[in-house]
Amino acid sequence: MFKSILVPVDVAHRSSWEHALPQALELAAAAKGTVTIMTVIRDMKIMFEGVYFTFQVEQMLEGAQSKLSAIISEQAKDGVKITSEVRIGSIGREILSVAKDRTIDLILMASHRPEMRDYLIGPNASFVAQHADCSVLVLRHQ
Image 1 (spheres, rainbow, N blue to C red):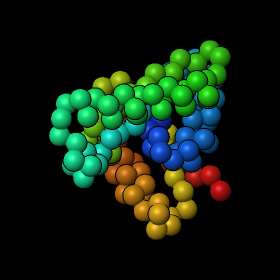
Image 2 (image 1 turned 30 degrees about the horizontal axis):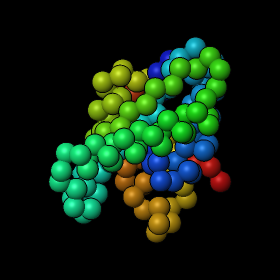
Image 3 (image 1 turned 180 degrees about the horizontal axis):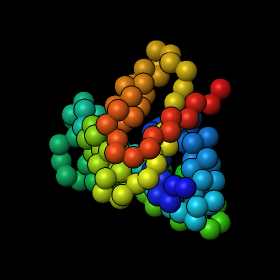
Image 4 (image 1 turned 120 degrees about the vertical axis):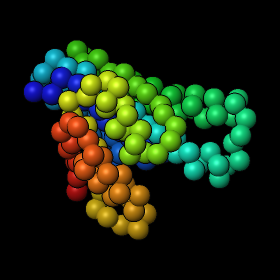
């Protein structure tokens, strides 16, 4: 059983959590475990948006945390502890970093059928699956 589950999401895309998070909550409930939901603000996004000042970065972090809190309140399940984390950096590397820092047993990621607009999720899921020290489940919803 998996007692500590990590669900990386893109707060801008509902499809990254609408099926993955309920699955993670179900697994955690069965094992009396916890779920950590996380998102990553890409360092490239900060550069492209011209964010250089500390308060601008803090605003981005607070906005992402607020969106995670809304997702948690929408999806919360009795008896399952849900924590959240926002990181800045490379998506794959930050997912692996959180998994290591929190001693995660399972990383549960959503994926889609590859299309041009979904191109970025493929390499991230692949990177995490190849380099994680724990089990990785890439959930595909049709």
